[in-house]
Structures are given as C-alpha cells and as structure tokens.
Image (cartoon, rainbow, N blue to C red; front, side):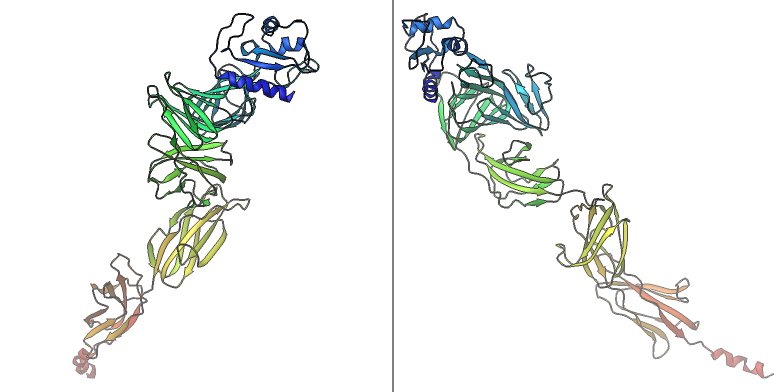
Length: 564
C-alpha cells in the first residue's frame, strides 16, 4: 500500500504545477493532471467510487478512460489512470495549537462554542482569520503537521485545508478501506508576517502562503513571509530552510529562493533575484539577568535596523514583544513579568529583508520593586555621627533590607540591616568619607526583590576643638583651629554655653580670629563652624571656655571712702 500511495503522490506532485485542462468524457488529454492508481487486494469498487472519486458516477468515466473490459470489477495489481479533477476533496480544519495574549478569530464558526476570542484547540476552517494584538501571538497547525506562527500585530487567513483522494484519518470508512490521503493547504497574509515550518511530506500541491501581491510555494521548508500594505503592498520572503518559489505580480517567471536568501516584490515590481540574508547580530554582551521592570541594553556596533522579539519559549511560539529598533539606539522592553525569557534579534537590510536570527536567554527579577528613597538624598553631605535613613515602603512588601557600603558595587558592605518593618533607620558612622546605601523589598513569603540603585552620600569630619585664649599682653582674645584654606569660618563669642547671649560674631577667611578683650570680665564661650566651597556647613565645634579677668583698678578710688 505504501508503494502505491507514494507512486500516486509523485504523480499528483508532477501534475499539481501543470495548468488545468478541460477533457471530454472518456478521453484524457496529454496536459490534464492525472495519477496512476494501483489497485491493492483490500481495495473495492464501492470504496473507490465513494471515497476516492468525487461521485460514484465518475467511475464510468474512469472505466472508459482505462478501457476496462468489465467496469464492474477491479483486480489487484491493476493500474488505473485517474484525472485529479475526478478525485474527492475533503475539508480538513486547521487547528489553533498556540494562543498567547490578544488573539482573535474571525470568519465562520469553526467548531461549536467557538467565539472571536481565540482559545487553544479552536478549529479553523477555510476563510477564517487569526488576528494578533501588539503583545499577542498564535500558532496554527495544518492537518499534515505544518505549523504557521503568527507574531504580534499580524492578520492571517486560512485559505485552504483539505485532503485529496481519500477520507482523512478518523473518518468513517468501509471495512478494509485505507486511511489517509494527500494534503493541500494555503495561508494568506493580510497584515504583518507569518513564520512557516512545513513538514517534509508528500502533498497534492505545495503548501502556499499568499499575499495580495505575491505567492510563495514550498515543499518541506522553513521560511518567513511579510506583507506591508503601506509600502505599495510589498511582500518579502526569507528562507531559513529548503527552497521556495516566489511569484510576484504579473505573468513574469517566479524566482526560486534557496536557504539563507530572500526576495521582495510589490504591486508593480516583480520579484527580485535572491538576496543573501544578513548574518545575525552579536548578542554576546546581553546580560543574563535584569533587575528593573524596563529591560534595557545596548547592541554596540550595529549599523542596521533591528527586529527584536521576546518569547516565553525557546521555539518562539509565545512571542510577547515584537519591535523594531533603529541603528545605534538602546533596546527598551517593557511589560514583562518576572521569569525566564528568550530573546532573538535579526538585522534588516535596505530591501527590508530580515536576516538570520541571533538568540539568547535572560532572567527578569524586578519585583517586588525597591522602596522609594527619601533620605539621605543622592550626593548629600553631613558630618559624621548619626545618619538617618528614610524611605517610602513598597505596599507589596512587609519588610525592607538596607545596606551601607564603601563602594557603589557593594563589594565592601559596612552595614546590613534586614527585617526592617519601619520606614526609617538611625545608625552611627564615625569615620568620614564617601558611602553608598541601597534598599530592597521583601514580601511576607520571604521573596526578596532586587536592590535599588545605589545612593551616594558623604560624611565630613567634625570640627576640631579650638585653641587659644587671652593674648600675652591681655589686650585681645586669640583663637585658632585646624581648617582648610579654601573654607570660610563663622565664629561666635557668647556669655553662655548655649550661645543665647552673643557678644561678638564674624565670618573670617582664615582659621584664626583675634578680637579685643571684652571690657566686662567674666566667663565667655567660643565656637566656630566651617562653610566649604560646595556649600556644606559643618556643625559648630564644641564650645571653648575662656575666663576674662575682671578690672579692679577703679576700686582704689573708693578706698578713702571705705576708711572713713
């Protein structure tokens, strides 16, 4: 049986490309497609008339064509020549085997309960369309196992899907009747593109993909077809495996496009000679992990436009992102959930042909997102001592984790505070220098999100204790302290340690201050603070106590009065 089926299929394949011809009953013209059908022991005249031919009445013509002596009998080993126009065609619905995101079905209902919202398992009859949204993708499978992937923002239609000559597997058959047949199928691209992976089986005619301006015929291959109505109805084909025949508009001879090549045609221009597809871009620099909701990366050195796609599976049947990226621009991808993702990219040449794919995988772990930082703000400055950190917590998380480090890469972590349920933290840092801090959110389940961006802050040293006091001649007060030449100094002298009763103050440009000794003796207090060129104002130094002697010289004038 297998040998007979193969011989019959080879004859059908040879006849499928020939133009149809009209033959008078009882006569087969040389140009009319026909097949040689070898009768097997299990074949019956009833089965042949009912399941192979279009009607039982067609047997009369077959008998005449083959000059059978007894048209009521067929013998095993007998070879019958049958025109393909007399062979039965049985519709075979295609099936939606993949549906992700916004996918809709249009046209006649393919199965009971079917609706416009696509569901995996929906049957698709001839005339039905599959439409994908910007973040939707679908996979259509024909009865011969061929698959058509419909990426985002595309519209495709099932044109034909049928068996030729014998009822399909699973149909009600007479006892001993053969199961199977020869498949014939075609898709139409109305918008966007499709990616086809045709099974390497014998068909009644090549699997076809058509657009309003071109036809692509294929046997056992993988290829892409795109249609752009805005560009004069431009159709492009890129062959990834095998070879396709590409027919553009008009009566001109079609183009044979081999593996690794592509071609284009539009409403007025015939198909171009095959053009070699561009090699894949370099994805070796793609990070293996992203920790922000916006996946962002560069592809340095790329000088052509790129198509970038992201899918949830390695076969790219669940594409959720399909975007074009201009040469030299960053790739920015939004809307992805946390998890493992597959990415592929290909270059686009000046003819709009899309080249070979480069593939890579990455992990996205961006949630729960870090708390919002409040203080200290980036590049803030303060003196060493107690540092207060503050943030707005993520409502999806019950705890936060805070780290302080000496470096932005957090290779030297100085403090690591976990299980923080409040939105503030006070901690002491006694060494001046530049520091970095960052936060992460932790869900109740213990699921920790990524750390946020490192925030920089700087701790300046506390002012040194001042020195000095009364000058040697007692006529002035002289104070000195350590300080930088570029800093300004704000100085104060007061009668009380709280500096509520200030008797003298000034701003000087050197780390010294000289002022006349106060006329009023007693205890005084001095302090200073520095104003640095970047605007940072240090805390005041610790107060310095000075005792100014009282002037008793006026009491000698009162002495005579005291002696009376």
